Image 1 (cartoon, rainbow, N blue to C red):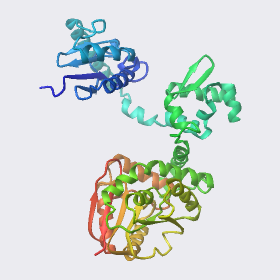
Image 2 (image 1 turned 90 degrees about the vertical axis):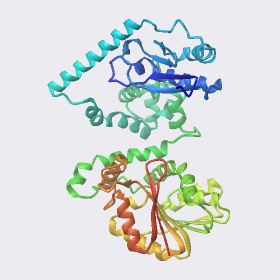
Image 3 (image 1 turned 45 degrees about the vertical axis):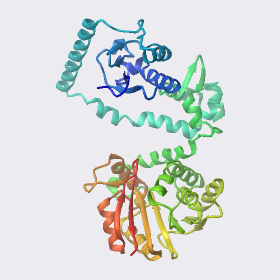
Image 4 (image 1 turned 120 degrees about the vertical axis):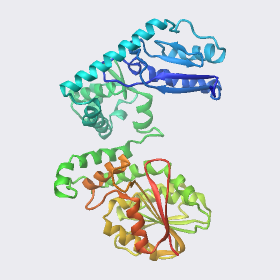
Length: 451
């Protein structure tokens, strides 16, 4: 049974560079073109588009197959998508010039491909070669560092509407030879294009990395570059048991990049958190370490009677005020300079939030914050922790386990914690009805109620 008139499979099996594959021949572009044509022609309810692994015809790619009739296409290009949609998926007439119907040759090729693959894997195993998965993880820092350096230098803005290496190097006050090498690597990563000696931004890099673009995320991403420098101290941090200072995290620029990075993460997530919690009966909110104020802004927009207060460090609250002002909610979101580890919280709050905060502190510090939060909440008030929550063994999810190392290199005693730990700390502080609320994405909520 087919729930759709047509089901289209496009091979997107990635393989090491230099080995024939459908993605190397352009299947990702074919997939995107098909998706756009399906949307444009209003065929979403008739055509199911699905990616798939290797079909064994790597030298004939990009390969796709259309069911229920089982029509195979080979060497498809993005420019063919409109014709395939119009002729085959609308009028049920396959595009003959692209159809591959030599069943015997196809079967023989697929069998040969499978045998070669298994023989290659057996040879690698016998020789004790490092598996591709491990090789890719070990060398994964290379493309990452390339992009982060480009962001630190603001290369994509320097490229502008197009320039050569000498022009870009002059704009960056950087060595032309080295700039050219970096530019070529960015072309290899498909973040720039090159024609002759001139480089241009791709639509993707122009949208997200160029100064002046409405979706520019460079400032927030430069914080990731700051994190990279900390991760270079991981070996020493494991030996020492805590962070190794590198002298990069106490400047105004670092703080602005950090808050921009937090805003990038929180902007779209904040409304989901507020919806999960509900704004009914909420009048006063204390946002501890609220940074850009994204969650207070979301609460203020969700309930006309809500008044929020962001408590953060003096060097942060001026930035918070900028984000709050841009959101147009300054009348209902106030800022207070202070230190949540020492300062009094106040009293009578309906909600106290700790969004991406607890991982910065040790168990003892979190226990103390929870205790003082309990005192500051009104009856039936809620303490809300949003963070990366580990399983009981602290080995998953992968993101949370890796982020715990991020806290090792960045803080004196921070870590990712488990649901069991948060529950135990809240209960010890006097909270009842402690529960976990699952959200889409890497983080979740732990909520405790004052009774």
